[in-house]
Image (tube, rainbow, N blue to C red; front, top):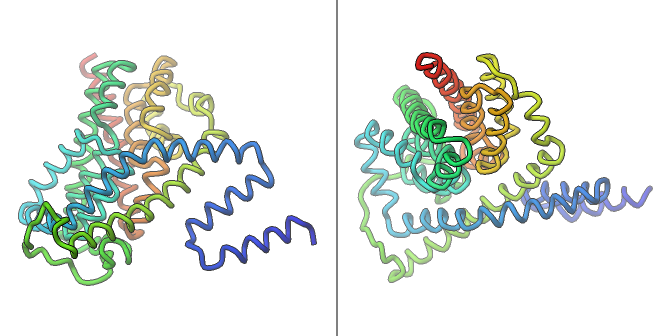
Length: 350
């Protein structure tokens, strides 16, 4: 037997009992180190840089979610929005379109709110609108691409949130998509047990004065941080390979054409090719300069923003498979509607 075979067997034995995500991450880098050592080094640097960039946003969202849980505010929010789901969807979509949370940073908030009993429709509206636009992206997009396109992207974020929220509300009222969270997520229930209680609880914003609430805060923060860290590290590692093997020039070659027919292709290509919201801004500017239809450009940014690899993997790990597939379907259908709607509006006014 060769040395590589012995090494593989030894690594397999060492990984027995390890969490499957951590095991996959270790195996990925081990394979790269053996067969593509240069790419392994580049992937390590890329993964650590990407994780370091998102870490502040991740920590803010995790601490906020843990604070809501420890203070008892998550159940109060759940009780409030359950009384008026239509208003909750509208507010969630508007807040998501304007909030600074990225698609990965909103995942711990999704877990906390779903575990508290907040309807999936409101959570879906927020999660769908949030990654498409935020204040910093608004400024950068308006400078690089132009204000009219940036305003269209902001409206698209609001539309996507409302579309996802009300479509999900229809399924909820039909008795579908119950128990969205995977078992073990969100206080150990994860949607696999009885519906969370929405009875009001004592609200304690200064939770640190009570030992039980401090423990709840620490436990929630630790669990969600480790959960997201492993999935995001794996996602960024895979993303590093996409950067190496799917360069922007390849995307440009397929999406540089104009016309209505480019919109479906932009949605399909946007799912795997969209790597980062800020990196996508100069790419889209270049594509539009090459003649890409504005509707196709908007569809690419909308579909890619919601279904980018790190975000999609985090959502997949959080919710059950039917909910995840519904999430992807909403992103694709909504992006098509956004692309065709924007392109049609430009034709009418132009």
